[in-house]
Length: 270
Image (tube, rainbow, N blue to C red; front, top):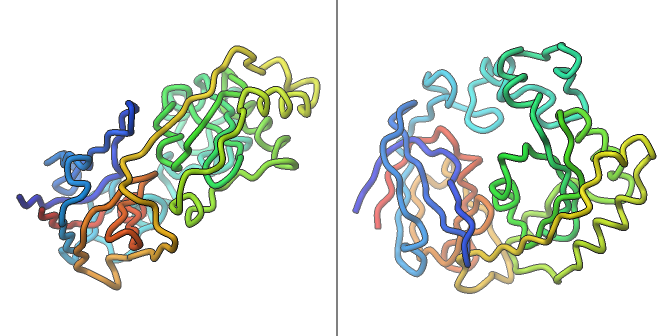
């Protein structure tokens, strides 16, 4: 089988193990969906077709910014608003938009979770409630639990900032890809870190949340990982030995971050 199209980040569904699909677009139009779990253990070939298209405008570009955007889109699109990376900057609850009022009302003036996840270790993060468990899967978490639920984005960001004095907010992706982390009692961790919050933020704490366990379709985890880039290696071939986060694992040690290649036009054969 052979499919050609522009990469978007893998879609996922939580089950006994995560089920992955890869959407391929014809520039901006959905074209194919590749079922990836059935390919684990099989040979695959991914060929860069020497074209990248901005995921917002569709125009041909030579370099991506953010997740597959042109520089213009990165500087103007609400998809790359400063409050995406730094939720505490959002002010839409005050009626103030950073880039796009309607978009920010729809996406940031919405319930958000502050969560703890066990990826390469314990970390804190923020996401819209509608993005759970997708957000946890995208970062390769093996466990996750909700610590707080807020009614707008900035409040979640302020909680995250308060916990950054004690917890990381980023994943060590290499360590995450080398195996499953040591199991943690996340309900106990939630209660501990909730008590470290300033009094004015404790009203958002969610005490009835439970630990979510996440398993990935991986044959064997590598001892070392080597990151592949389509810009420098336009044809990648090997046995698909696992999928975790937004990474394909090939031949037990090579990894390809599909999300970082959003907008790249490829052919995929298996």
